Amino acid sequence: MIIDDVVRDRTPDGWRLSAAVDSALTPGGQRLHFTVHGGEPEWMPPVGDAFLAALMMPAMALKEDVHVHAPVSRRLFRSASTITDLYTAWWPHLHPVDLRAPVATRGGGDAVGLFFTAGVDSFYSLLKDIGRSAAPDWEPVTHLLFANFERKAGSRYEHLLERLRHVAARTGKQLLVIDTNVRSTCEPTAFWPEYHGAALASVALSLQGLLGRCLIASSDQYRYLPPLGSHPLLDHLFSTEGLEIVHDGAEATRAEKVIRMAGDGDPALDDLCVCWKSEPGHNCGQCQKCLGTMVALELAGASGRCPTLPAALDLELVRAVPMPDEPGRDTMRSLAQDAENRGRQDIADALREGLRRAGDHRQVAG
Image (tube, rainbow, N blue to C red; front, side):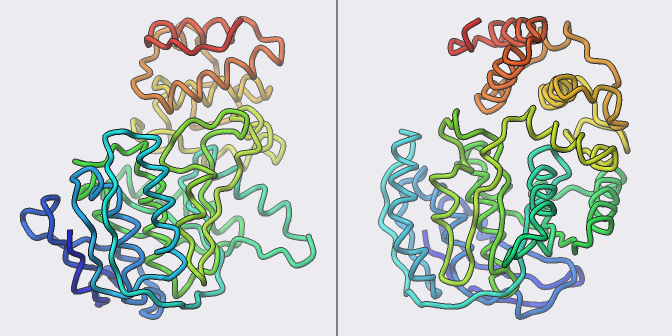
């Protein structure tokens, strides 16, 4: 796999950083790109860091060595061997490959970013950061980053952007929207739950001229951390000399995060966005993500306070909801434990029944 011709150019949508990728992954010769809406050219230095982060896992799936014909951060390049060691230890279908690139040491920007989707995890990180704003020497989040990996468009997408703009305005942050073809290009060889951390890191790395620090909100809790694409052992390894990437929020369970949101008042729940299966202004209320969030709201004593979800929790839906992937089952296991700890055996039993129906063999013991 050869990564070449890294360039920054102006497009009608904003500044774009792109590179040519010569690989079995890109038989049509398409370029990998990141486009930030608005912004300044100096935000996106034409270096190879973002492309190395994005393409390591696909190259390992294809058994292709990676040669980057553009400068790569010395720190990131040193960490790349640990990243590939973690990948091969966690996912046996990935294979060690040789990585080559010219290395350099560089600085970064001064802004602090947080990847933000208006979901529970990123809302928790935002509220926690705001709560620390009075602490001495704290560098607060300045920018909320939305990475449009699915390359969404249309009315539903515009409504989501309106929610994000509303949160940014209410909290005094600047919203940045970044369009990228990273997911569509790499997903044939990289399963999204295993890959999404590298994809987020690549977006942050494309903005090294702006960011000095960037938070990735955790979806799991320290006491239960299965292999996942975004992980406390992994995310910081994508840092450079000038950009620190931080895995944030793993100290809290899903229920604890929702309790924090509910405690900050209903405005934190007004814009909650859980899934894509929704009409404008409403989540579907029936998928695993929605039902898991509704369970957490019930445990937090906040049922009916989130206008984007149904007011009442239906435990029959919890028992029957599909849980097709391991990260989703992990969330439900954690919620079952939280429910039991809070004396809600009815919810714990419904979650365990749903896990049994999903073929889970690692349920929390009752």
